Length: 188
Image: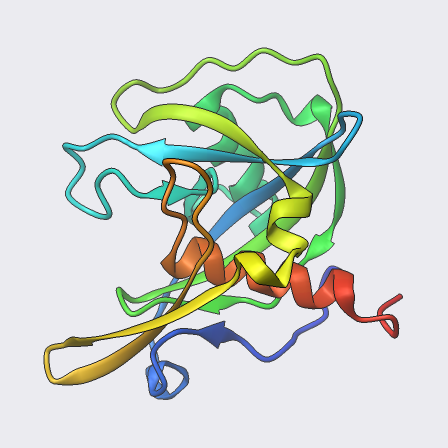
C-alpha cells in the first residue's frame, strides 16, 4: 500500500478515465474488522439516493473544505455514515486512487477496526452495514469481470457477489486493488 504522500497510478473501469481531468476528490475507508478471521465492513446505500441507490459501498464521500487529507475525509465520512469512531481504526495505508466514470477520484484508505464497536447508521444514506470475510475477496474463484455498453462506450467492471449482495463496480475494483496488494509477495 502506498504510504502518505506517495502517489501511485490511479485505477478505474473506464479505459479513457485516466485522460479525464477535473475529477472530484473523495475518500473511503476500507475497514478490515479484527475478528477470528478478518472481515470487510461494507454498507448498502439506501434506495432513494440519487447516486448509486441500493449499491454496496465502503463508507466515504467527497472531500470537504475542512478535510486536511484523504484520511481525514475517510474517517469523517465513516463516522457520519455509520457512526464508527476513529478510535477503533488503526490506519494501514492507502490503495491506488480509483477514478470513477461518474467523475470522482477516490482514495481508498485501509484500516484495521478493533472490536467491539457499535454502529449508528445514517438512515438517510445507509440502509445496512454488514461484514464479508476477507477470505471471500482473496479467493480468485469469487472474482468476476463483466462489461456493458453505456452511451456508446464499453465499460468493464469487476464483481464479487456474496450471498444476496452484488458487490461490483468501484467497490469491487478497490477490493481487487486490495487483493493485488495482499497477493503480491514483493509488497512491503
